[in-house]
Every structure is written in C-alpha cells, then in structure tokens.
Length: 311
Image (cartoon, rainbow, N blue to C red):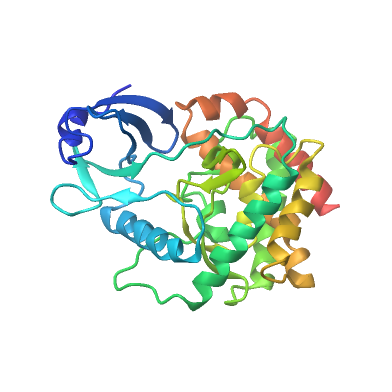
C-alpha cells in the first residue's frame, strides 16, 4: 500500500531524492525504508491523517532532540531542503530519520537484560522531563484515564472492540470504573506524571549486537511514568515471563530513579489501563495486521486480567 504523492515527498530531502521507498510497517502510520541513490538507507514515517498535527510532531521531535543530550540511543530526524523537519506527503505529514541498525526483539527470547535496559531508559527520560522547560507551543496528548477509557478516547472506544460482549463487557465495564477511581486517588503529582514515551514495547526497540535503540516517539505525551512500564509489556502481559520482566524493568528503573510504595502498588492498574487502550486501538485499527493478530482473544484475556486485579 502506497501513500499518494510519496515520490514527490522523497524529493523534499536531498538524501532521498531519486530513492526507492519500501513499506516496512503499517500500524498507526506508514513507515518506509528508503534506499537512496547513493546506497544510504533512511526511514520515512508518513503520519496517519487526523492523529497528530504538524505542531505536535514538531513537539515530539523537540523532545527527542533534548533527550539526545542524556546519552539515550534515539533516532535522529533530518531536515528537508527547506530546513523543516516535518514535510508534506500528499496532505499528510512526513518525517525522515537516519537509519538505525538492529532487529526487533521477540517474545520467545530471554528479555530480562533488555527489560533492565529499557527500565533504565525510562528512568533517564523521566528524570530529564522533571527539569526540562517545555518549548513555547509544545503540544502533545495526555494519556489520562478519560483519554483512554472514554468513548471518544484517543485510540477509540474499547466498548466497540471485537469480543466485548456478555460477561466480558460487564467485567470490563467494572474495571473501567475501578481504574478511574484508583488513578484519581493516585493523582498526577510531578513525581509520578509527566512526559513519557507511552509506547516502549518490543516493536519500538532495535537491538544490534547488544546496543538497544529506542524508536518511534509518535505516541509520546503526558501520562503516568509507570505507564511506560505497562506499555513495555504490550501484548505479552499474559505470558509466563511477564512477571519476571516486570521485576527486571523495575530493577533497571530503580537504579536511576527510585519508586515509592505507592508507585509499585499502581503497576497492575497501569497494566490494565494499557490493555484497555490497546483494546480500543484494536477496535479502531482493524485494517492493520497487528489488530488482526489479537482481535480474537484480546478482550477475553483483558477481562481475565481485570478479574484477577479486582479480586
């Protein structure tokens, strides 16, 4: 599937002019590998219409640039010929990134070391946020309980997702109410709520000979810091290794930024909040391969996790 105007878009960067674009992922956005005429590869992200504005994309890239000073291994955006980082691709926003080597880690592998690493990544990012002054006009979404659980949520309405019927719907309705209460009580103090990556899952990591690069800040926004832990467990929350991976993430995080007893007590709620967000996403992104992979069992498995948490 190609984006209309893609060839013209490639001409907006000297690095990709005359290059060949190959679609490598369709999830929230179209992501292409661009093989340039000089043999150098780049990554082109063409944004889904109606999700992020050009201003919010500029804000995402501003945070990435600021985070580079911490030493975190991150993707680097390249300006177009006109000096702007965000370009037009047939009416859609597009950003070009340097190509980062590596492969996506897989659930069946030993991920313990990786989760210690990304726990540390999250702690560094959160510590940075607490002292960073937002640039004028900074615009990113807030991943609050209402933004995730309401019918007009950022990723859609979980009630409209496949499998949300009968006892599953009743259970998820109850956990919706309880999550709202728990998160309201936990609060949004600056020690627990701020700018987060919000999608630090396996698909957004590249591992290359021991080096881990954190990519795809497209969903970054304001949320609870521990939501980054929940997001790292996306689609593997019910696997046998999930509990051990959670502990590894906490070890990596706590070595840099301590967590309180209140923080630790909210982890299960954060995992369920993330599951509800993913459930809504599956319902509103049925055209994607990722949604197709999970639509059959995701609602029922989320209800089972919810029952365990409420018990």
